Image: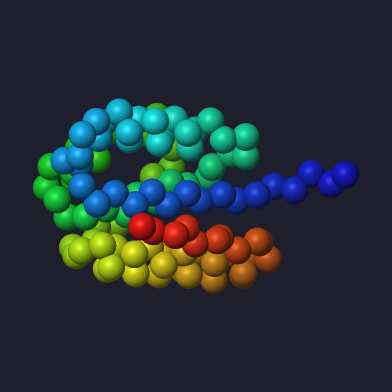
Length: 108
């Protein structure tokens, strides 16, 4: 059986850091990304423009993950649209490299 190498990007949308146990939830999310069997090549954090969230993310230790961030200065619908645009751009890039497309998550 041929061993395929996958180029995996994970998109993590964050709307606010003011929810209960935010730091613990983010830590669990990051550890989950790091513990995947298939290595994650890139973590894309799409977040709101909340100042406390931006400050927190800027000081957060992502422990060796390749992290890119995108700030959305809008409400949930605009955040969803930004995520879809990023997925579309990644899929265009993947098509050029003959790789499998990314499947967009549902946002609730």
